[in-house]
Length: 54
Image 1 (cartoon, one colour):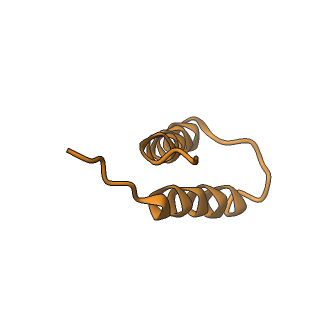
Image 2: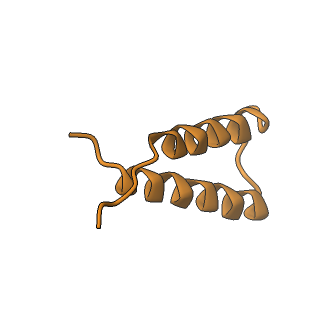
Image 3: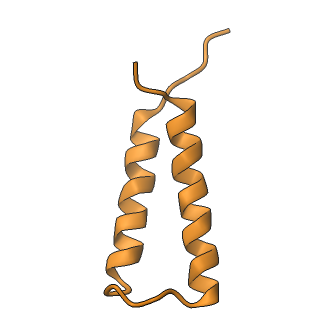
């Protein structure tokens, strides 16, 4: 069975991270924001690992 690769998943997660950080204007993250950022980062990492580049 072949694994389905969705490269847009990584791109979408990356865009969410960029928007999240841009909304905070470079200030340090609060504890709840740090947790949300880490969730976004985990989503991005999972998408990248699911679809490695050749």
